[in-house]
Image (cartoon, rainbow, N blue to C red):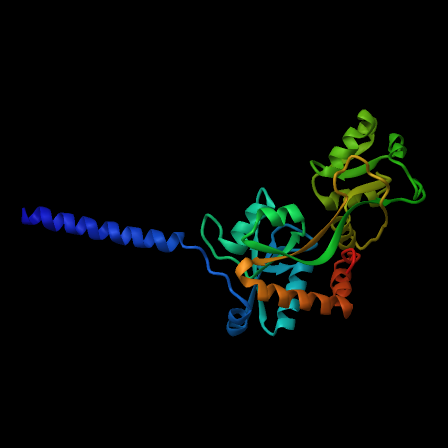
Length: 289
């Protein structure tokens, strides 16, 4: 009897300890308001992996436009920047949950601020735990062109006779492949890597290159080259332009305000333009800024 009581007591103790540990693991990661960031002297900045020219890892170090921007924001706030480089999830909603207010399902903390977040109203409405704002750049879908081969005021019918390059599986790819019931299919040159598309363009194998302008410009910069860009009408693409900004935990609104003020200062001083130019990207400010 005594042994049974002792055994039950031990089992109860182990269960209580397991529950306590589970509660600790399941507890939400606390947000860090501005005062906590200032006290720690570190701003934890979340950027994407494999998102050149904005962010990527090289020899264990984070690099890119968003990394330089994160350092500049930290400097303006009066702290040092520490980077958390994360792979993109299937949806931006997943990224906000993992990087801003809850943490990854596999473990790991959140950042103080996440960069390169689309400032989309519907996205913000779906994610009340995060505050999305502080727009700092306008992304666009555009075409790099060979002016001697295609006119600047072109329509996509020109690619019934001229070749156009595009990254496989993108919105631009779908648009080109379905244009005029597939009329361009034979002249769409696919590539898996952006650098390959630029290489083919520079070699004259394509007369144009379609995709996200900042990404294409970054690859041209890496190749030591430049191109002329145009934005012809692209009926059928739901969104050819979108703005990216930041996201913070909704409990860290004061930090978001400080970051917003820092972005405005950097833009007005021309520092944002310089950061983008370092990577060969034309700085396109958000509308109305």
